[in-house]
Structure formats: C-alpha cells, structure tokens
Image: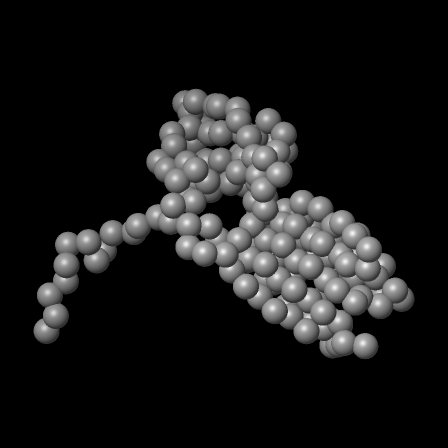
Length: 167
C-alpha cells in the first residue's frame, strides 16, 4: 500500500492563474468595460446569479478578458490558409456565431479579432480552448480543412492553430 504524501491533496494553480483568478476575493468585482461580475469565485454576465449581496463590498476593475484585449494579448490564434473565396463569408459567419455562443456560456470566452491579411485569415481569442474548439468546428463543417494544433512552452498556455484548405 502506497503512503500518500502531504502535498497530494493540494491544488497547485498554474502560474498564469495567479493574475487571472482572484483567489478568495471577498465581495463583488464588476468589470468597468463589459459589466461582467465576479462573485462566488467565477465571472458571470450579471449579478442575477450571485446570492447574498446585501453586505458585500463592490469593486470596479477590468475583467481578465478585457485586460487581455487592452494589453493586446491572446491565448488562442488561428491562421487559416488557402480558404476558397466562395466560402470565406460563410467561414467568417461561422467564426462569429461560434464565438458568440461561447461568450453566452462564459463571459471570459471572447473573439478578439478576425483579420484578413492577403489570402489568410488570422483569428485571435481570449481562451486557448475556444481556439481549439473553433478549429475543430471549422474542420467538421468544411471537410477539406486540415488542422494542426501547437501549444507554446510551459509558463504560457497559448494555442496556435493552423488550418489549411486542400484544393
């Protein structure tokens, strides 16, 4: 029988989480930019989901997603190459709708930008999981797309996705 070590049951947060998640923050934090609210240890769209707000202190600051957009940072980048001209509008529409639905579920999942540089589309998101899920959705929808996902080294958790259309 193996003996458990003292640190086995502790949750060790990733380095990035220190600035993203307000650990044990008392009260409510409301984003100055998008009105998202931090209460009960998570970010929500509104204060309707928060309970017992009578005696809580309210602070105003930027949420992690708005802070990332302000600092021109991203956690997910998708580069789409060789997209046929006739499906580009459908592709942009799919990206916007997918990210809109993700934002409705979680206020921290955001589409930062869709840039068209030459023949390529470059999409940036605030969450790496959102970029990966979006890439898989594009592959599922447009069968001629090949997806390659890479992640940056350990301290950072940026996902780089390349999608190339076979002609």
